[in-house]
Length: 581
Ligand SMILES: Cc1ncc(C[n+]2csc(CCOP(=O)(O)OP(=O)(O)O)c2C)c(N)n1
Ligand SMILES: [Mg+2]
Image (cartoon, rainbow, N blue to C red):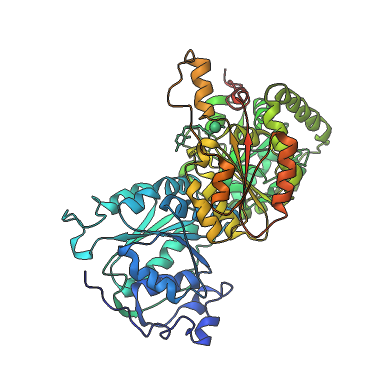
C-alpha cells in the first residue's frame, strides 16, 4: 500500500520543533479559548496527538500495526510531550489506560489496530463503560473508501463502528485532517460531560497520514452545572428530619469525598462505600461501614442518600418498602428511576450537588447525638463474625494494609482475597481502592494496576490476583520491565479457578470441571523477565516481602503466595432480603 507522506510543516518538522509560543499554549492549566489554535498544515494523526497534548494527556497506551503506522509517526514526533507505552497485548493497553484513568480521575487514551486489535481491547473498554471511566480508544480502520465493502482487507471487521457504538456512547470516524482535532476535543468533552465514560475515535489507514490545514483545539467548555434549588431543599428537608439516615456511595462519589464526609458528620449518618464507593469516607471514620453492616443499616433506615451508585443490590437483594425514602444523586438522569422512583432526584456531578445540600441542610437538620460508639461496636461485631469465617483472607489483608502507605493504591481482582478486600480492607482515601465494579472481569487487575502505577508514580500501587486472573495479562510483566513500572503484584496461588472450583465442590457434588490449573513457577516466571520475584508463605512472610518490595521503586516485583482452598466469603456478600419482605 502506498502511504502518503505526512505533512512536514506541522509545528515545524522535528520532535522538538514546537514553536515556544505554541508550546506554552499547550499547558494543561490554560482554558479552552486560549488554546483554540489557528489552522496549520498537519496530518490527521498529528492533529489528534496535538489535541491530546492540548488537553493535558501525557501518555498513550498502545500496540502498533500497519493501519496505525502514521499515528505512531505522529506519536514519535511529539514524544517529548506525550509518552507512548507499548504493551504486549491490546487488552493490556486498554486496561492500563483504564487504571490510569481510575487512579488519576483524568482522561486517558489507548491506541489499537482495527478488528482483532480492537476486539482484544474490548473487555477493558466494556469495563471502562461500566465504571464510567474516561478512556479514549483510538482505533484504526481499513482504507476509508472501502469501509463497509467486505473486500477482506487486513483486520477488516463487519461494521466496526456499529460494534463500537454498542460499547461506548460517543464515537467518531475521522475522515480528514480538518476534522481530526475538533473530533478529538469533542470526544474528550463527551467523556467528561454528564455521566463520564469512554469514547472512541476511528481513523482509516490512509486518513491518519493525510495532510491539510488542521487545528489542535484545547478543552471545549463543559456545560455549567444546573442545580435545582427546590430539589435541594426537598432533599435537605427529608434528610434533616430523618431519624436513621444512611448514605450509600458508589464510584460516582469518588470526587466528592469532602462533601460526603461533612454530610455524614452533620447527619451522623453511616456511609456505606459500596464496591467502587469505598474510600470516599475514610474507613477509620466510625461512620464508615462496609457491606454486611450496610445491609443491616439499610434495613433500619428511613432516608437513604445514594450518591453515584446504581443501588441494584440494595433494591433487588435487600429490598425496598414505603417506609424508606431514597434521595438519589446521579450524573445520569436516566439512572434515578430504573428500578424505583426516588423520593428526590438530583441530577449532576456529585460534588456541587452535595455542596448545595450542605449549605441547605443546617436549616432543616435535627439535633443528633453521636452514633460513633454504636457503629464502632456494630462494625466490630461484624468483623468478629468475618474472622470466624474468612480469617485466612483477613490475615493477608491485614498484612497488606500494615505495609501499604495511607495514600498507596490497592487494585482488587476477582479472587478470594479480592472478595474479602471489598468487605474488609480499610481504605483511607478516595481512588486508592480500585475495584472493577459490576463487570468483575477476571484478569483485569495486573494490567489495570500497571496503568495506575504508571500514571501515579508518586504513590505505591499493589495488585492482588489469583493464579487464574494473573495469567490473563501476565505477559505484561514485559511491559512493566520495559517501562520500569514499580508495581508490586501479589499472586495468591491455589492452583485453581478457586471460586469456580469451590462452587463445583459445594453445589455440584464435587464434579470438578475446567477449574484446576497448571501454573508456571511464578517466581521463576517473574525472574525470567528480570523482575524481582519472591515466594511468601503466609501473612507474616507476605508482610516482610511487601516491605522490601515497597522500598524498591526501580521496577516491578512479583510476590507469589501459595494458598490452599480458602473459605467462602459469599454469605457476607449475597445477603438475604431485609426490607419489603
Ligand atoms: C472475564 C471473566 N471470565 C470468567 C469469569 C468467571 N470467574 C470468576 S472468578 C473465577 C476464578 C478465579 O480464579 P483465580 O484468579 O485463580 O482466583 P481464586 O478464586 O482462585 O482466588 C472465574 C473463572 C470472570 N469473572 N470474568
Ligand atoms: Mg486461584
